[in-house]
Image (cartoon, rainbow, N blue to C red; front, top):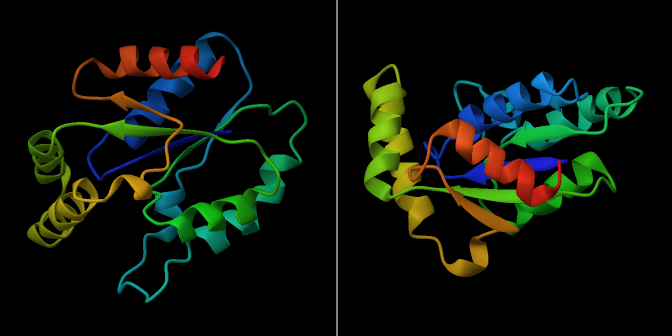
Length: 164
């Protein structure tokens, strides 16, 4: 399982799609589960349902014969998030890649893509909080700078590093 984590605007969904395209071009069985989308709800709840929702659908993916690769773009923000991810997917081995970019690039990306001031403001705040995290709240096995290269190149780099 490949987990793509990082700040809002770091390219998790974009990179998941590019990796999926590369695996598809090689005719390799895989799935993409956008975990953040499993938690899109308004008004927001005190506790996100994303991990419970992932746990609920995970058995369906685990039961697919020959599905050896799963890509999860998701924000892992706390040690509890990481624990909940492990609980949701059982003993599946994880490759966790933290996507990075300069704060200015992250802010520009979320400002450009979000549809209204509410979401732009919310995600800019999440970017600020994310980039100020201490090192002990970084969960990637390695990092990929999504600002330094095109998404196709980042996807290729990730696939090479994890041996897919």
